[in-house]
Amino acid sequence: MDKKVTVIGAGFVGAMVGQRVVEKNMADVVLIDVVKGIPQGKALDIAQSASVEGFDSRITGSNDFSEIKDSQIVVVTAGFPRTPGITREALAKKNGDIISSVVSQIASYAPEAIVIVVTNPLDVMTHLAWKISGFSPSRVIGMGGVLDEARFKYFLSQELQVSARDIEALVLGSHGEAMVPVESFTTVKGVPVRELITRTRFAEIIEQTKQGGAEIVSLLKSGSAWHAPSASVTAMIEAIIRDSKRMLPAAAYLQGEYGIEGTHVGVPVILGAKGVERICEISLNEKERTALQQAADAVKELYNSLKAE
Image 1 (cartoon, rainbow, N blue to C red):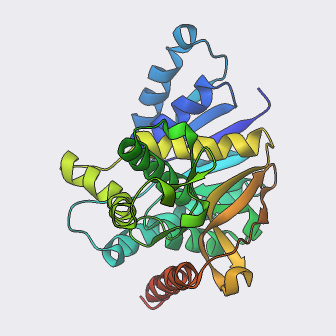
Image 2 (cartoon, rainbow, N blue to C red):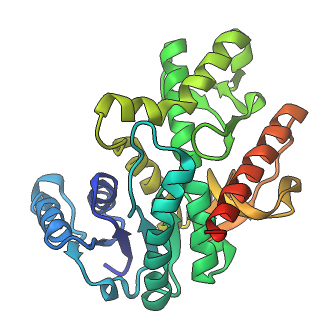
Image 3 (spheres, rainbow, N blue to C red):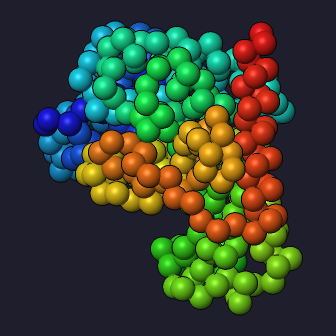
């Protein structure tokens, strides 16, 4: 196959991204991890399901970063997961060094790749990855918005007792607690959600969505979500590999859009073969615009605290 995707970090999210990509026959996959045997073992296990699942794409594992050469896309999941009680600041400090090391290797071995960052805190790690890589802003993207949107649609579907596939929603801002749902773009088959649910209940579902990842961490006790995150990453990979020009929310570098400059934050983008091919500016009310600006300011503040270390 002439398409190649590398996933750095062969934990639960990384391994499942690899599995989803090969099962969809989108590309060959290389799993990279520093722990010997882990990427090789997981890749071999997935590969042995080829005849059952009906895919021809190849998946291999390695501890050698040079294996990422010629990758069209590199997904970065490496880093420490969220654990109960850990702050964004503490997590950023722990994962900042990992991202710096990993992205330096990407720049060396796959200088033409598009990078999708999954490591938390996502917006800050995406901005750090872009700074370290020296890549065009269009080629360094964070995953969070697709996941927040998926969680939002799920909780709305449960409340309204409708298929999640019939819900359209748009979530901006930072991944997780600082997400900004846009009410005017939230509909069920074109029907505005405000006609189907009270504002109080809508606000409660927004809060439930913001805490969606933390709830899973709390339930699991050890580790964090991987099924929905891997599906979200795979949707982004597919948009790029297929050059399908999908509009998806992603952490992108803003250069004046929405009045925000010089940081990564979640906004709707058009994803295609070149990565972020366009940032879509939509009309926001004053509350939504303020919340988006606050999310961007928080990303800048946390990133600047890393630089000060």
